[in-house]
Length: 352
Ligand code: DAH
View 1 (cartoon, protein in one colour):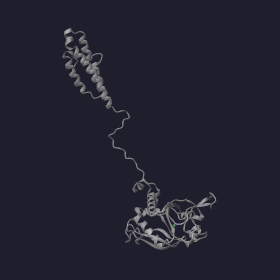
View 2 (cartoon, rainbow, N blue to C red):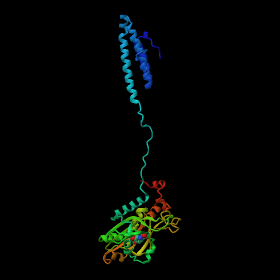
View 3 (tube, rainbow, N blue to C red):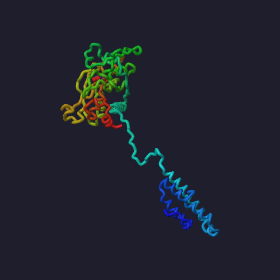
View 4 (cartoon, protein in one colour):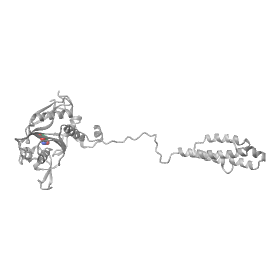
């Protein structure tokens, strides 16, 4: 910065000013520049005005105009630069738009919800209706109407969780237990609807089981029921084969093994080909090549009689499948408890 010296004349001073202005970067530098050029005392402009006051008429003529132009230019340029600096200044709470964005955390549907929805979609395509139903049941719907009268040994097949106090709602039987299977929904639906029937009922069921690799006291089932004229075991097998292919992949084989359930006759347990070894035998299928996935059969005439259907008019098939079991098989998981521990590292593996 050169010392203030009016003898260089206003035009040269103006060039100096422009050079100094070009170097200004901050508000503080701009304030200093303002003081130096248009401050009341000791500034370039003040010096020119003083010089003018004592100048001869000839000198006034020579640079009076230039001094005024200098003053105007300096003031205008400083005001302009002040506005420019203000426009680039960040407010105190400014957002740094150069930071990388924060990835939004998406929720994930629970793996069991994915299976439930997939099974529901498979049967919706086949023309079934998808139902839910009450989890607290009475003895009649859970056992008796399913051909398991009191003292029937089949009741020992399931260890039932009973309510401490029966619940009385409306005129029906008192509700005494948590349903042990979704088969209760067969009865509830047929009581209210004439045949034909084509339904799946999906939801939680409860048993007095201790937690281990394959048991939880609450788990989920898919119940299927088809009733109409001329429904046969072949329809059951074709339906389950279609479901197995849709769930586990085209070409997966199924087989029926004779079994017993009080509410079906004949009854069968159904296996799918081991999805790990494709049937050749591995540790997952205990070297058999097959894995059990559900129970099924032709609806027992006693069940039809309980709901007022004529067993000479209609026939039907039914099946019940564990949702957790399907999920474990499909994803090759080994511990059913993972579904209930809410560990995000597990839950986030299954898509949205
Ligand atoms: N209720 C049986 C269970 O919980 C499964 C089952 C077997 C359901 C045969 C059915 C059936 O509808 O026909 O293990």
